[in-house]
Image (spheres, rainbow, N blue to C red):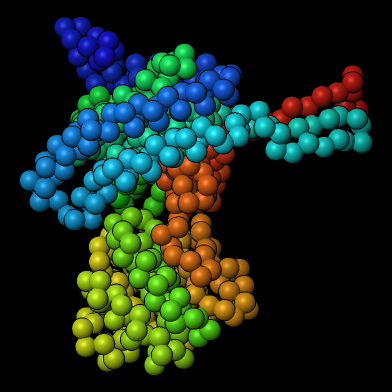
Length: 431
C-alpha cells in the first residue's frame, strides 16, 4: 500500500506516474526472479495456496460484493458465470497453484544442444520473458493463474483486472503476495493496477517506459482489438472462442450426444464452449434428432440451416451472422454438411482458430481433420471444453493464444519463456 499512498497522496503526479512506478518496480523484481532459486518459487506458490485456502470466506465475501454489483447493472448470465467464485472453483484455484509449484522449473532448461564440426558446443536454453502485463475482464481466477504461471517462469507480472471483479481480484492478489513474502521473494513480482481508470490500460499498452516486455489480453473482442491496435509491445492474442464440433458418419451415437452436450452446455460462457455443430448428412436420420433433443432438454436454443429447421420444429433459422458468432450463452448454430471436406471448409471460413473437435471412429477422416484445420487445439472424440491449461496439465493458463508466433494454445509456464544460445569454444576463430 505504500506505493499507492505515495502516488495518490499529497505528492500525487497522476496516473502516468503510478503506472510508470508499477513498471519500474516490476522490472526490479524481474531482475531478481530471473535468478531465483526454483525451490523459493515453489515455496511461494505453496504458501499462496495455503493462504487462498485459509482465506476462502473472505474471498467469497469479496466475490459476493462483485456479484451483487454486477447483477444490479443487469449484466448477462454468461458474464456472471465467469465472475462467480464458489468453493469448488476456489478448490480448483488452490489445486492449480500446487500443480504449478510442482512443475519442473523451466528457467535454464536446455531445449536443444549440438556440436559443430569446428568444435563449438551450442545450447539453446530457456530464459524468462521479463515483465508481463495481463489485461483481463471478469474472471477473478486469472489473478491466481497469471500470477502463479509468470512467477514459475521467472517473470514479474502486472495485472489489470476489470472493475467488475475488483474486490475478488484484490482478495486473491493478497494471498499471492503473502506467498512471495513467505519465500523471501520480491512482493512486487505480482502487482495489480490499483485503479479502475480505463486510462491505465492505455499506459500499459505504451509499454510503461520500456519496462513491459509483453501484453496478454484476456477478454472480449473489443478489448483484444484495442490491444492489438494500440500496443507498442508484443501481444499474445487471446481471441474469441468460436469453436466447432463435427459429427462424422462413423461416430458412436451415445458419444456424440454426451460430447456435444458437454461441449456446449457444461459452461456456456467460456472460450472453449462449442458455438457451431456440424453434422454429416449421412447421419441426419440417426444422429441429428437425438443430439438436438438432448441439447433442447438442457435449455439450449438451436439455430439451424434449412435441413435442421425442417426436421426440428423448435429450431430457429440461422442467419449468416450465426456462423460467425461466439454466443457465450445457451445458443448453438447447427449445419448439415456433405462430407469432412465441407466441414473443414466451413471451419476455415468461420472459426477463430481456437478449438475444433471431431467425433468419429473413421481414422482417415480424423487424420484429414487434424491435418487440414489450422486451429490452436484439435480434439478427437472429446469435448471442446478441454481447451484449458489446467486440463493440459499446465496447472492453469493465462489464456489460449490463437496467433502463430511464439505461443499458441494454452499459455502456460513454458510459453512464458524465451531462450538464448550458449556457445562454448576452445579458442575457435572464424576464417
